[in-house]
Length: 355
Image (cartoon, rainbow, N blue to C red; front, side):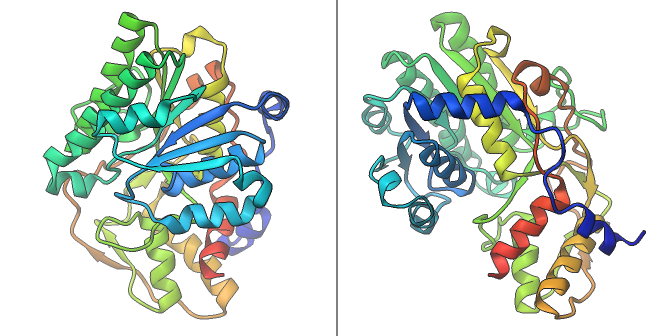
């Protein structure tokens, strides 16, 4: 069967949608909370804000637009409507400033911390700023949560912490040497999170995101992620590049599944989750050559325009060769069950960008 035919067979969410997640959403609808989302104007953050507002929650965002735009939240507020928008407020502030952190945390029940320098190449160019944002900024938010009496602190870690670990499928208990300042900063966050639980009882839960993709992901700039960058280039008839031979593998996870994991981590009663960091991904790997062919087929199907072959160039410093999530623990402890295949997520993503 052709790859193009497979795209049509895989456009719907994967079977096995978690009943637990459905129940949690019903509970939130009946008992709204006030949430602080740092970095909520970003790609992942805006999808989380959209979901929480849709569940009747009160949401506050702390963001300094370091790697986000006002357009993301404008799009969200348009989607959710005026009633939900009335439950939203925005604070322009920086997690590197403890006063901004404290102000944003007043009166909130939950914190989900997503604000970060999220780029490996940028961290190679700016290691000190990466540390200030990702390590010091995260510690600022953790101590703010402690001081404000907030019980749960959920934060974004990264699959980059695995570094040169040789396992093809990454397990939480096997960590290699960091290959970038970004990876080191995210690992420092995990050490602090475990310490905050031990010393202060703060219920920290970390999520090691693998390669997240979806609508509203930034396609522009030198540090843009591969999927939006490629879609944007194909849309404009520009060349598409792969760093290396295209056999690098990644675990691509659709953003709505990431949102599910964040909500599950924020609401779990399972003490085995606290002080831990969990892989969040699809649990299967796709190489970049396969990814290119899939996106090209979708763009050509939707636009009717031909897309040129990919151009290969040198490997990029700091990149991991193979990365795939072992999702056993997140499924067992947080009862996570991803809804989307790569093909299903890509179809939504390509359609959104081309629209």
